[in-house]
Image (cartoon, rainbow, N blue to C red; front, side):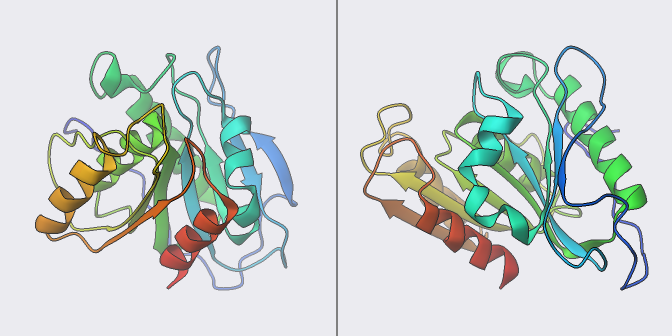
Length: 221
């Protein structure tokens, strides 16, 4: 398997396939000291769902990251893995253990859940946004979208396809400066030919509710 590659893929399931779990929050059961969460939305309990792989920032947690997209969480099945270290592997040793855990989590989900293959998004906040953007660019055969809230960078080691990209950043962000991060990154992505929505907002290192809804509109359009 190539570096950074995710092998898991949605399986063809009946349009009205029943959801295997009731709405709620469940452990991913990935093993190890740090597990993740699976958030099942409120809904009819059957039929294909969009999927959002939501990645936390440095020092963050799956639960805290879920709270950032709470206004839109009921629109999709949300998979929230935890990094093996304080942040994602590319920032520490290179793509490896976290890619493997994400692949395993998605394989389990795809085996049992009816997922819309046209609405599979890698999403994240802060370092998680950088990681989500990077893995989506490397795995365009799987991820149709990337939702990057306040990213710092993109570091793909290969390119596959052209997923639709959504970037947002606060103009008063004191953690990841918009001038050093998204205002440099967004033009590069646009020049590379990615379908891109880039939004700046008055605020800091955060995901305002209005921005979360705009990201959801981008995913569902």
